[in-house]
Image (cartoon, rainbow, N blue to C red; front, top):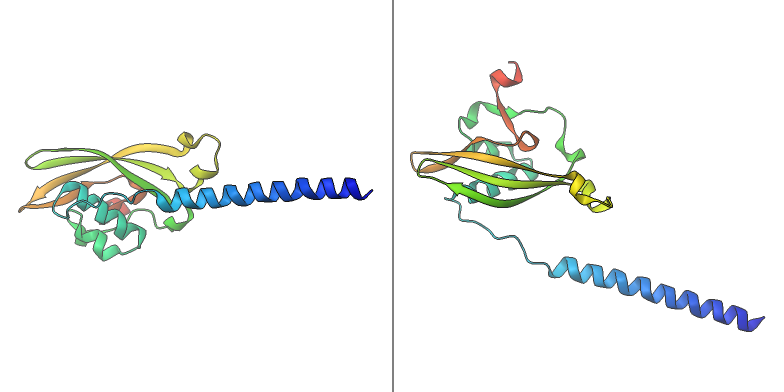
Length: 154
């Protein structure tokens, strides 16, 4: 009987070692992946990046500072956004002299748990205008949007 128990114990120990090794490998992969590129603040990409950081920090005054007519804008959706965490990647941009479009990909926080993560991934774009030499967001995706008082029904 002891040989069956020792064989089962060896299998369990081997399985536990494999699981521990996989967890350590996953942690290494996550911790060693490169940080996203930080764009200059005076570029359309930098404005979008800082707007998204303010959105994540729930800093409405900072968000308003990156948006055209920002003082008169507030959150479009009065419900909290924390229920649906978003991971946003800047894909590409088209920059003209007075306008720009920054293309992004949104991945919901649920994507990492789905067998097909592309189902919770979608692309959208920010449109920016240059006003007095400063890039400001004119239109943003609804998921991270601010609205005018008229749009909110006030």
